[in-house]
Image (cartoon, rainbow, N blue to C red; front, side, top):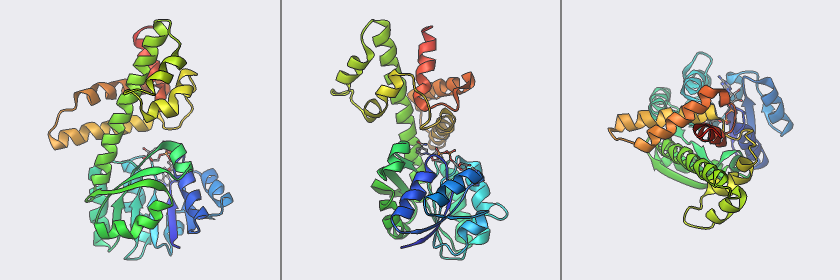
Length: 291
Ligand code: NAD
């Protein structure tokens, strides 16, 4: 069993920390929101008042934060992870951030003898609750093997995809696919309903054919009922589409469909839907047809 410092106890991190506690690890958690720390303490974790308190004595530090600036601040900033840990610690950043930032963090950590993996996840809040996440890992093979038992307490599909930042590149590919599929499911709903076909029955049969996919399986009922509580917020998906397009530019490739879908996500945000679940892309697609 491992002594773990866990920073970022939001929609995903709260459940992931709870699963690690459940598995028998000693987890000390910190979040800028005190209520999130209280919730973790109720689940059996140790509360920390700051980053230093969370990482003091930890063998492994896990971060699950919104975006690159928060990871840079928490890891590299004054009073941050690198200032508080001893050499030899393994830092696993499970946030979805720019691959570039993951490589910067890994380089800065190496100077202090701290090992780093980027290990973003897919599977949503339900995947976090059920410990069934897909985990895409960048870093050295040796560090991946060290972390594997911890990953197995959090997820089911666990793959080492390459060096530092590679996990984030795979996550960017995941996010462009998810947003694209949600956009197409939204277009299917608009077409069905505008044509007088029952949406529920239509999606039911689509889910059993070649168009079947996990988003139809998991989100059809809530989307048809226009229930858009997150889940995964539009604001975070907007961030991920930016990472996908920046990664495409860095790699010198064109991703035209991703470009269009990124604009639909941007429209949802501009219309004030940033705090809703990403299935609220339906609102933008409906609005295009004045529905
Ligand atoms: P969230 O906003 O619910 O959680 C982030 C937490 O980090 C919050 O509790 C926030 O208070 C905390 N935080 C922010 N800045 C901090 C700081 N400086 N120090 C300490 N704590 C700080 O977000 P989430 O939905 O849990 O997502 C976390 C990451 O996982 C994001 O990168 C997201 O893109 C990714 N992700 C989310 C989902 C999902 O379905 N929600 C799925 C896969 C991946």
